[in-house]
Length: 341
Image (tube, rainbow, N blue to C red; front, side):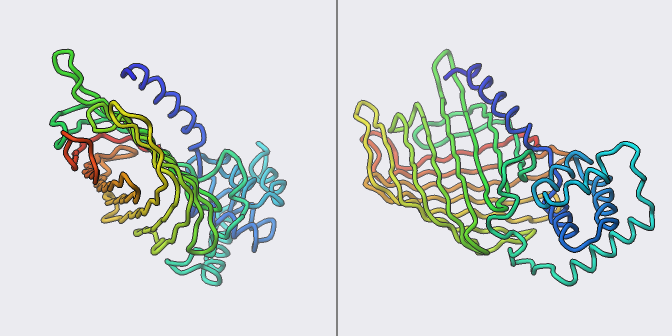
């Protein structure tokens, strides 16, 4: 795969996912859902107008939210927001809406570690333009050590749909470098996971990953499986989920034949908001199989203004049975400029 081909695929992927990224935040979505449940027509209209003035995406994003979380009140929403000559919301109405929302929150707000408002099979699981999508595109430099010692350029895109009924995580990472027309690094990593809520803490998911590295002991490795996840923490500042998935691992050794082995993947996803502008994430994975492997990744992301951030990432990979002539361990450090969407 050439850089030009990858860039074209990356651009197409970004365009497709960015189209779904326009949204109000999950907090605003929850406010709209509560308003639709407890408020009368006037209060509901005032709440929608208040959110439309403050949320990213404005009236269009609010209408998309109503269509998903409260479709039975979509007609009222159109009357409040969809007609150009509709009456403006007064300050008194806005204050009334805020007071009603506050009373609703006092009466029924879930604790920080309770997910009852994210009830399974809610309206959020329906397909639509608003699906709590977010993502980021990044470009940077990478330093490898282990089976190869090189500096290379990296490109990547991540896309995420928050777990409200169902969720999705996907990423594409590509690194390339060459010296004197000799390839130093040529690596492609693709990960995808679709996840569905089973209750306040349990989830079910299917996942797959693919990794091709020209300088590793395998032409490519891949895993596909399905399993269960358990959320230890789910808070504004701290998220931690453990997962286990039986499946199959595919390995294509250099000069050998493709091998398929039963496997079980044990994984951990951890995210901690250190400050308002900095966060730490950790992704851990151990694949138990005849050709077992382990993968650990840490990333420190610091927002530098607007939707821009700087990301420092460290990844450690370990193959328990590499081919002769190859080392067990590889490590890499990435420094990237990130644009969130």
